[in-house]
Length: 479
Image (tube, rainbow, N blue to C red):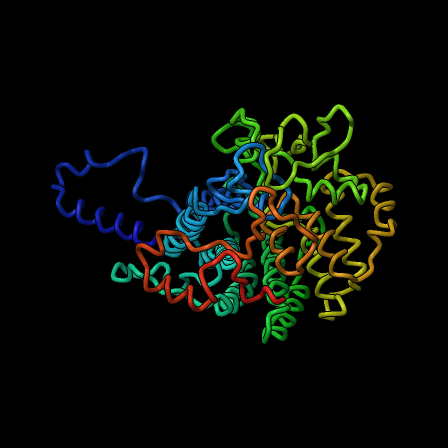
């Protein structure tokens, strides 16, 4: 990816040097400007990040398969964890590096050079971009492990960036998000339609930054040697102020008409295809708990009135199994980057007997608040929530299996975090895909282009993490 960017820049520079000034205007493409405003870059990076995390397209990511919320009807490679046939790692890598992080880095430079902005406005806008960039970096690390970081966007002489240690990147991301949180109040950041998440509400951006810091902390809380850093980081995030309700959720509302519709709608409705059904892994768990979120997560499309999940990783008839819920088929359905339910589950984990971090309240209180937040988001009534929380299988017992199951169910529309829950807690129990029986991936393998174009550094990184294999655990994924 880096080579492509640098090659494009080099070619563009060479071409500009060879063009006579009299022909300069003729070589400008009005539909593809060479100098893009920081506002546009920021908005575009926000939309691309949210779209990539929500996207169900099998060419881009398979998080809804890996987390076993959905399965397929006909094409079985992806729910059977064939990552390379469609170049999924490459596409995920490219979108986050090129369309999110690179654009944000470019926008930072433009903001810094903008003489019409006060220093406070510059500081606040750069802090907003830092929050999104830290988010994207964490996703890349949690997907692959060691990645190009410190050299990822270097000079033109460095076309073969070295890979940084994943744990070291985490330490730097924690420092960066802490600094960004403190800078968001320096002035007015991007606002109005430019800020597609909060419309310029800087207080909510601060809560988002602190909540993301909490996520970083808890992700490394089981990693050997990182317990103290995790505790300090989590407690600092909590004291600075994390999400307090669903009104704080970091979500992006897509538009009703193309090209800015939710990518779920594009694959489920606009495509006219019938490629996905709800997976039996998720449907069986929801049925066993008589979970009232079924009516939101799932479609009541079977004449029997039952919810029946398709066999995970097997060939499934679209007509005979439960479809994805109606809400997910709306073009304006919000894309979730982070929500209040996740934050309360993270606080419950922090307050648990295993951690005993000072984050206000008990693990049980945070756990119940997390489930409540999820159900309220999906329109479940207060009475149904109370009944659910009092159920013997749901009432807090402190077990990893129960906690992880509830956390995973709440992340149904944030599937990357659902995969993270499973990797961290080794729960709930997932199915082996019927067609191949392959184990659930612990990571994505590196893109093929890295092997071909950055071989020495790819080889060194592969050796450092224990092999470029789907079953190589990340540093925080302790047994």
